[in-house]
Every structure is written in structure tokens, then in C-alpha cells.
Amino acid sequence: MRGEPSAKAQALAAQVERDGGTTLALYQEPLGDHWQIFCLLPRERVEASPYQRDLSPTHVKRLTETIKRLDRFVDPIVVISPKPGVYWTPNGNHRRAVLDKLRVEWVPAILVVEPEMVFEVLPLNVEKAHNLKEKSLEVIRMYRALAKDEPASTEERWQPQFESAHFITLGLLYEENKRFAGGAFAPILRRVDKFLKLTLSKGLEERRERAALVREADAALGEVVAKIKKRGINHPYVKNYVLARTTPLTRARKTLPPFEQTFKKLRANLEAFDVSRVRYDEIQRSAIMAIPSGE
Image (cartoon, rainbow, N blue to C red):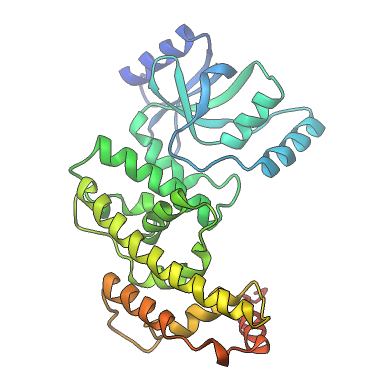
């Protein structure tokens, strides 16, 4: 430590004690010398932040079995405190759920002094790798919270936290339909969906319009897939195959069309798609070629 702990750190350490926890240490983390608190918190006071992805029951089960086998808990979770008596974990929710499941009395935690850091810590949540749906839902939840707390800020301001603009649009689509074929549309969205210069409050309206365009294209895609299945061709890669052949984007294009133009053209291409020329072996070959190499 260099000098006395900050006033905010000391006040938060005292809050931990009032909340029934135990402050084990106040220390400066080694990179930026920011004050943090290592503490034991009552299990019932620790909960998930409202912005992150949902729990994976499979991962919780696997973690529970491993921790029971080790008979010890060695990996403290990260928490922030939005108000006295409440501690949110933006990184460690699966571990928190295991402790809850095992009815452990105390949760070992690293308490970050600045509560606004909740949005900065979320991208570090790699306890279980995100799939596309989980990441998109996490981002749209962050977006809504920031639009409420920081309405004048722009999407561009939060690029590091959102990581990619297409997660925002996909988040809206997954909120409405958890079974949305995000993986099929992601390659197109990733290329044309960019961060907006609009404020978050206005940007959310634009995002809803973009999601509606994607939803219309998805409806047209569903009709094409239904016609292909009627011909007796049923393959899990069929949506990706059709989109690859109807996308208005090509690898050779240096200048990409705007979002709205892209999805209106995609919808038109889907509506004009000739299903009579589709062959199962072509879909199968495309699927094999799309599998990334082990390297």
C-alpha cells in the first residue's frame, strides 16, 4: 500500500461490517493502484447484476460437483455495491450460484470501490464462455441501463463495453424470441451494423427499427426454408446456406451499403430465391467448408 486507503474505500469497508460482513483487507490492485476491498459477505446479500447473461444450469451443476470434490472455494467473486446492504457480482455469478446451492454462509469477494465499474467489469466475465445469445442479451441489458443512467452518452462512448454493434440489435431480437437464428444472420450484421453517433435514448429507437428489418428478413427466410423442407431436404445448415446465396454483400466489395438498404435487398433476394435448384449435397458441402479448422 502507498499511503492511507481512500476515504471512499474506508467508508465502504465500514459499510461491509454494518451489513454483517467482514473486511479482510484494503489494498491497492497492482496495475492502476486503485483501492479495493477483500471481504467476506453474507451470502444472502450477494446477487447477480441485473445486466448480465442468464445462468447456465449445466455450468452451475459442473462447478458444484467440482467445488464439492475439492471441498474448498478458492476463487473470490468480484462485486460492487450500488447501495448499502446490496452487492452485485458482474463477474462470478455462476460461482455465486454454487455457493447459494451449497448453502455456504459467506461469499469471499473482491469489492470494487467505484460502483460505476460494473459496466467495465462485465466484459471480463469469462467464467463460462459466452455464446452469441448470451452475449447479445447481456449487451442489450447494459444498453437499457446506460440509456436510463447516461441518456446523453452515445453508443460510440461505450464501444469497449458493447464490443460490437451487432450484439445490440441481436439482443433486441433475442429478447423477443430466444430461438432466433442469430448465428445465421451474424455474418451479415457484423459487417453492416455499426455504432451509432446518436444518444443512447434515441439510439434505442433506431435499434428497434433495425431489429424490425432483420425480423422481416427472417420471416422471408423462414418461408424459403419451409419450401426447401417440403422438397424433402432437411439440414441444420440450411438457413446459413440460403443466406450465403442471397446476401447482397460480397467479399469483393470495399464500400458496404447502409444497414437498411442491405436488409431490404436481402429480403427481396429471399423472396425471389429459387428453391428448385437447391440440392442436399451442396448444403452438406457448404456446412463442411464452414467448419473452422482445428488450428
